[in-house]
Amino acid sequence: MRSPRRFRRTALAVLSAGALLAAAGCDSAGDGTTKGTTGTAEARDVLLQPLAAPGPGPFTKSTVKAAPSPSPTRSPEGDGEGATRTVHRISGVVPGLYGGTRSEPACDVEQQIRLLTADRDKGRAFAGTADIEPVQIPGYLRSLTPVTLRADAQVTNHGYSAGTATAFQAVLQAGTAVLVDSRGLPRVRCACGNPLAPPVIAKGRVAHRGERWPAYDPARILAIEPGVRPVTGLVIVDAEDGTWMERTVGDDGKRDRTPDDPPPYEPSVDLLFPSPGDPSEPVPPDTTPSAPSRPQEPECPESSGDPAEPPPGCPPPTDPDFGTEPPDDFDGPPSDEPWELEEEELGEVPEPTQIFPDDLEDLEDLDGREQREEVEEVEEIDRPMDSDVPDPFAG
Image (tube, rainbow, N blue to C red; front, side):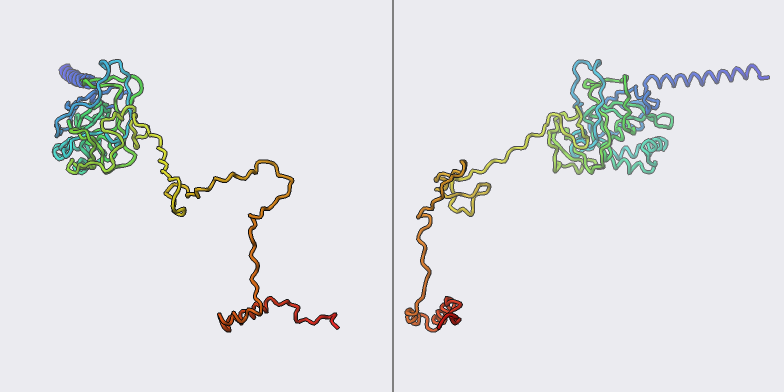
């Protein structure tokens, strides 16, 4: 039989464990972020994360290198409470989606490597979320590009708790420093070192929790999708002067340069809303293709001195007197009267040249024997074919 004292100790231990679990459960439900949210039900709770706030369960301390810039997202009309939530899907390689400062990385990648590799448990959890091995963390982080968001974007964030990574849905404020891969997909949030993944967009009503920033608008949220193919450079906006610049993928900004083929719209154009139909080939909403202009017709002179060489694009020149005569009238029925030829149409017909024997002496004085031979050949040709045939009716 179990003693009352042992039973009492067992009951107290069970109650204590239940109280700890209950407290942990309340904390999890309170911030709505420590439980996994990869399913549709959990995705209905979305945490708003201002650009400098570390958020729940940070993997590391902040590695943001540049000072946070104000959000370029336009302010909503009113307080935005009654606005309909709208998430716009867009490719991560769209020019102007990200920004940065020329020759200045948004995050300290080397510091991020040191922080993650110094804690084996966090490094292992981070690697598992990124689908890599812990020893691959340095190379993986160096392959990413440090930039800043230029619009509020929803992501699947991951906090660190009890040796594991816990997923939750979050909206990152425009201006947040992130590391993106070669397809333009955010992979690390530099303010906390948390790994990121594409968002899970829930249908129906969604509860936005956390601190709202002045420019927050639930109708203007991005869902960044990976580009169709990897790129070698991202075309982003320089935060200092608002111009285009290209940042090489995996570079810390030292090779920033002006793009050889800049986008056909200004960096200030709000091309994200509504988002382009083809994410890989963005076209700003206020830019419509203009109708092709007709080629300018060349100025052709009335006449040209050389008919064989007319100016380019001009018809060959004609005789100035051409077209002065009335055209032939072929519209009416044919006439029954016989056609008459005018004498001026025929002109004088020259008589054929004939050579007589009396003229041979003159020819000898001119050309000698050769001329005589030619004349004899002519006489032979002109002689009738039957001249040598005897007449059958003669004598």
